[in-house]
Length: 198
Image (cartoon, rainbow, N blue to C red; front, side, top):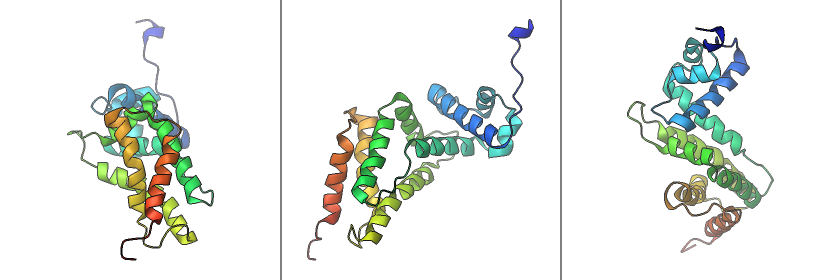
């Protein structure tokens, strides 16, 4: 075998550089091969690191996949703090809609919702963390007096995320730039309306 035909030796990456390389490689392997094809070995090869380094950093394939999905989504959809709940939610869900409109974003959503018998089912914990993160924006609005004290922050976030996920996963309806503002106005209108009997 000619030297050029031999596999490249793993790179000597450490610390933050190795972590970034492994998580990026995990997302790439997930998008190309799905959950079943995302093995620790495949990720290590794609990242140019030793397989033992991946196990040392994440212990299990499950931990690696969940962290990669969480980091990808959280990096693409940062949590804004504009001082106004409508602006925060439009910014946040507008970014989420743009991500889900891309092939990679749709693939990541499908993967994070997919059941895989080779992994323990930790979808609830994954999505609970994401929804809790979004609920911070609504909780801040309640503290500022923008929304009634009995507003359920988690339910507001679910009401906004649900239509986006439905379009990305089920209906194929467009995720255009007007969708997030319209959804936010609809949901905030409901959240701010007087409760029956109040």
